[in-house]
Amino acid sequence: MAPTEHRHIVVIGAGFGGIGLAIKLREAGFDDLVVLERAADLGGTWQANTYPGCACDVPSQLYSYSFAPNPDWSRTYGKQSEILAYIRSVATRFDVVRDIRLSTELLEARWDEARSLWRLETSQGALTTDYLISATGVFAEAKYPTLPGVETFAGATFHSLHWDHDHDLTGERVAVIGTGASAVQFVPEIQPKVAALTVFQRSAPWIVPRMDRPTLAVERFALRRIPLAGKVIRGAWYTAIEGFGLVGFVDKRFRHPYELLGRWQLRRQVRDPELREKLTPDYMIGCKRAIFADAYLPALDKDNVEVVTDGIAEVRPHSILTRAGVEIPVDTIIYGTGFEPAPSSYDRIVGGDGVSVGEVMRKHRRTYLGTAVAGFPNLFLTLGPFGAAGNQSAIFMIESQIAYIVDAVKTLRDKGAHRVEVRQQVQDAFVEEMHRRSADTVWLTGGCDSYYTTPDGQNAGLYPNWSFEYRRRTSAFDAESYEVSA
Image: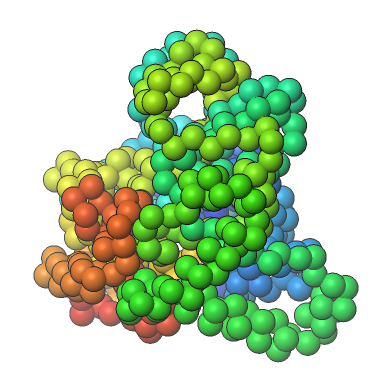
């Protein structure tokens, strides 16, 4: 038999995290690496999500690598196609496309204690690796609600993550289930095309002004010629978004100016007082993700749109029956119900005791700094539980984690070590700190249910502190927090 291929480092996922890791690992002298990507193209969530109106809700000057600024963003907030083009250009510019294996899905990764390495089975064959890094992100798997009778529906159904571009919605009666960030973006795009649009809303999202606009040619010229200008703009956006932490984990009373802004937006954009009442949130802003949007509320105020808050009793072959007993004719159902809170790849990463990362996380969300998990040697994560922030760009957090992971692998190389695992007591202390700091946050006490919290009412994985404090904690690998051995 041919020997199993071995790579020093294997990264799972070719989105912002995986590509950033490949770039920084190569800069640190690690050439024996490979990035496994299950899709046929790189880009992560920006390759997968192609629904109408798909765009980022973080300004592009901040939602991009700090080491690869782009002076040519066409708008304040990048659209999906432009963000995907940016990721591709960065991967090409830093020559890491060669490290990416597309259409290669991880089927299982199992730790071999005897040889201190990971054994991987993929859709393209087996390989082993010294270090496994999961960079699959947190928005990789579509979440569907459980609806009685949905299997009998005779029309088309699809999730925003798997948009059916071949299905023409023109003149149809469309039901949108869910009012999360994706639905807020695609509803205004499809509303002018459809005959009737019914939006099933479980709870009203907080909507605040987006203030998106095209960038001016003079702005792009200045950003190309004056690098400091880009740093100043990035810093300004960073400060503005970081300020949301005042509401999230400092004091809930800071929410009032933001709520006033949301109420002003609602009153300004929705004429019908009855509809406005339906669209008024009954929980504190920040309890779940607030949404920046200018087109969503006006779309709901159109004559061919109805917002239903009664809930769904049953799906029938050509209609949906509400809990109030109203039957609504429907040709197509679109799910805007968000994503599963943990990537499915976690279930495929199995430690030496036969327990997967997914099993551990479902029992109790736990990591150290969102990057390491006790019981799983030589494994690192990006955006693991308590490694994501509700008050900062995911790219800022990812870059912090990349720096920490690269420094960890460099430190182990310099020490001549081959096995590393976070100490259980260190992880326990970190998790206890996270829950202690979360106890009185708006996420837990703001009066709503969201993916910010677990079913038992605990913090599901947001870092309850300033992102600059997280950057300090991850600025260098703290080897003393780990069991390190040859």
